[in-house]
Length: 253
Image (cartoon, rainbow, N blue to C red; front, side, top):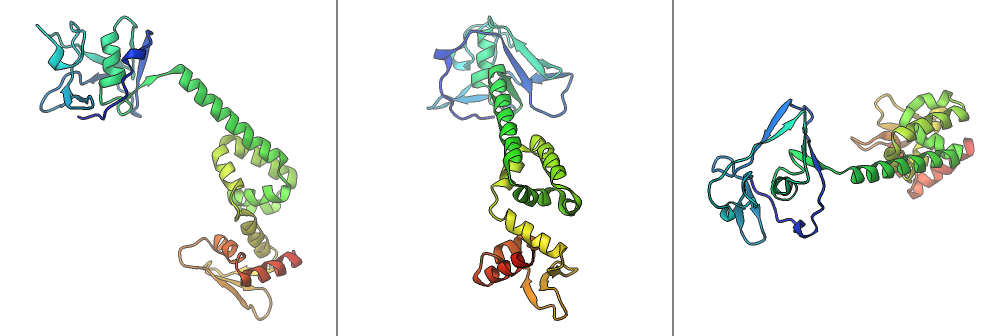
């Protein structure tokens, strides 16, 4: 197993107890981490010039095999219920796990409460931003987003119901809501959906053709194969021909 060169952090090493957590979904009761280099299970670190074999030995002050001397006592590293806590006194093991072991951020991670707190804070702010946008957004724009989320049921919802349900959606899915809110085509898609619901235009059973309503049923747009019909209509509205259709629909709406 090979790892790429990392920035040296030994000089700024913080003396503290450290906790490591397995990343796998299924957490075994006991998990034994590889602690020594072998031909069948290579354990190496690239120091910027060459690959160096590493191993954790309880009676050595270094993890590099070529620097270790005398009799070697190989240490065992066992995660219990997916977690391993290493006291600040065991610096060699901490550096073995936090700097040199190639399974770091693959099989396990170092738990950092400060980093997790910052991540939680960012998530909270993201949720607040999304919910504030729902609160301040015009109901017409919010309806357009709601149609992408709740589909046809929006037609039977009152404005306060739309805003309430979108607040709940934004709270649970802030990133998705922000993406929809910033989609320049969302309003045009909503207009096309409303036009179909109000029978200004029709969409055939195969979702391939938009027609003007009426006896003649003049064709408005053939949907390209594989595209969402309302996304295709939104793009059509941006063309010269589609702009005339857009104005006609808006007048009837």
